[in-house]
Amino acid sequence: MSLELQQLSLAEAVQRLGDNSAVHLRIDTAQELSASLVTSLNELCDHAEDGGDSVVVLHLGDGAGTPGRSGPGKVGIHTVNRWERALRRVERLDAVTISVAEGRCGGPALEVLLATDYRIGTPDLRLGMPLASGEFWPGMGIHRLAQQVGIARARRLVHFPAELPADQTVRFGLIDEIAADVDEAIARAVDAAARANGPERGIRRLLLLETTATSYEEALGTHLAACDRALRRAEAGTKPTTPHREGE
Image (cartoon, rainbow, N blue to C red; front, side, top):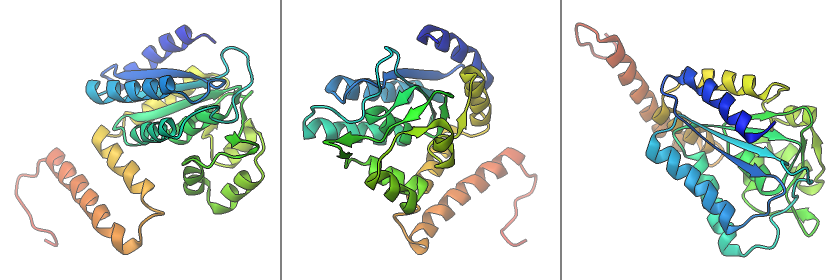
């Protein structure tokens, strides 16, 4: 499927949001980590933040028919640092982030996938772990893996990296669904995203990301503040005729 067809289908899908607000980027999985790739991801975030976009879709595929890259390639540590910061921006966007992975996907493309909210894979997906000199690339992908799939599965992937077929990516929790019809899958995800408010989505994502780094007691105040915001928004929406105090 060409990028142009994906763009046309996406334009139809995001109309379900009501504001036609979406931005998307295609990343070739054979592409190595580079300053231009970092710039592309930052520009995507700039566009989403400045334009108030509700949906960000990242297409991760071997468009040229070449095998997916397994590692970052020849790159300096400063570029790696900028890359990690760009991925963090993706994680903190108010927009819902959807990734579509097809063919062989690994290296920087896999790191992008791990930073998104919802992940769609095609039946031919083969997910490869990021490697450097034959060993698991020690970037923040390890941190994301441990957070998202648990220490036991992350340990297996880090110490014994192997290419995962489509069905196994779902069992590991790395991919949310395998879809032959990518356009329909995107449309369903957009429908679900339309039910959540942008800033509130960002708050809930942050709460999820902090669960493994903070104790219950430390997290309680932040969660209570988020609950208070939700209650105030609900109260403003119902517009009660008489004020009331908690417990009455």
